[in-house]
Image (cartoon, rainbow, N blue to C red; front, side, top):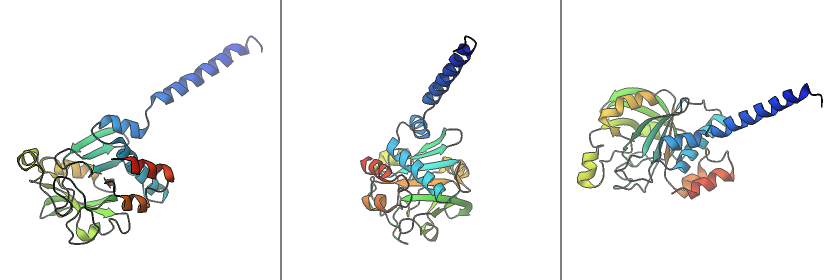
Length: 233
């Protein structure tokens, strides 16, 4: 090799090594969100991201925000996280209610049936807001047939509720329960809803084997997604 080419070749190798190191130092989106929300189960965050990516692959528009609800956690602990995916920021970490017939402090039963007063699992897309009997509220469209596609009919919406508060949790061992809606604290309801309105994703998780096996949004990754799902607490 000519002595004039050696510096160029060395520079190329150095540049390639620097780019590889920079890429390795940039965490994946799942790792980044897990670092932002250490109380959240990283496997559940991974499933939520996999579901949204699968939805996009099937023609659903992508979103900038993602809400993850982990109903395997007790109602007395924060189990709702709202992420800004573009800026990789945690916007909210909150208590969230489950349905009256879904369980006491721990959720265990889920339904897509009207009047069941149970929460629904799976991937939702948010729609518009309205002022209802629970105040400022956010409609959600369930995207999973047989699992949550009656969400609009059931009026499963995000809204504020006085019964979602830490004092009540300490007093009675659980927060209050809804008719199936993922209700949040009144103090943060409006800004949280505004962060999620207009076509963002909400992913509600519980280690329910039937749903995990049937969800059309947990199959794009083949067995890898299902293995992670069944391994999550």
